[in-house]
Image: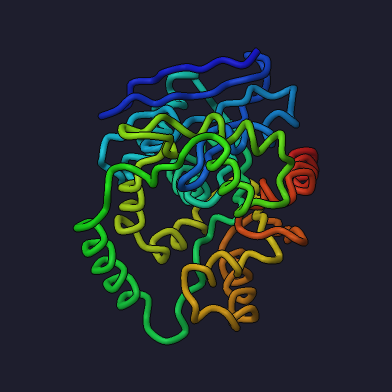
Amino acid sequence: MARHYEIIATDCRLTVWTDGPEDGEPFVLLHGMKDHSGGLAHIGQAFPGHRLIIPDLRGHGRSDHPGCYTMSYFLSDLMQVFEFFDLQQSILLGHSLGGHIACWFAALYPNLVKRLTIVDGFGPPRSREVDDELVFMNRQRQQIAMLETLSTEGRSMSGFEEALSRFQHHNPKLDSAIAGRIVEEGIVASEGQGVTWRWDPQADMVWSTFSHTETERLYSQIQCPTLVVTGSEGLSYWHYKNDRLASEQTWYDSEISRRVALFKDVKHIEINDAGHMVQYDQPTELINAVSCFLAC
């Protein structure tokens, strides 16, 4: 039976969605930036024998927006979830930001993670032009400048229909019924008129608190079997953020291969006709990939 729990973390309240038998094998799923637990519920529900645990990350969904977003806080929150449900040797899946958190957690606490799945959680490819340290410093400057104008509220929309239209515009391949449920759970009445998304724009601050180089150092420390899932159209997401990546498919593919090779026990699957939001573009294929991974 599906239930919502509230957990008091270090500095905020976290909402956690659960389903499945309490004595089932625990399966923890972590959503990405600007998403919420409902964005992975349709994936988790394909594993009915497992105890599904899907938190709204801080600054997302029904969890609090504490204004402090560092990798350390996200990891502390996840540890609070593990302790609250007394989890040991769990299956852990993370998408995008959730994939970063899952990698750090699996590396730092290997006794708690039995199997790890990362869904397009590597981030953008490294720049060809400059070294990683310079890229990191430039990112810091950009984040600091962004904070000067960053609002604590998202863009207001007239209501559910406009929110659904925007969501489906960016995720046209997702089943309309699933899209409707995700949007309904993902919006809240704004202080003025209409609705806004249930996420804190300041959560973007997390990207200034660690570098991809630091994350890559942890890949080799992950002890459990790992499944890396990417989409054949994943570059389009990073091209949207950086025009210079438009013709860099070969470089992007080589970056994925380089990062995959850093893991000790890893399998990589690329899903056709899927972009960054693999769970929205090709949910059945993602479910099949995870099912095969868990069965092997």
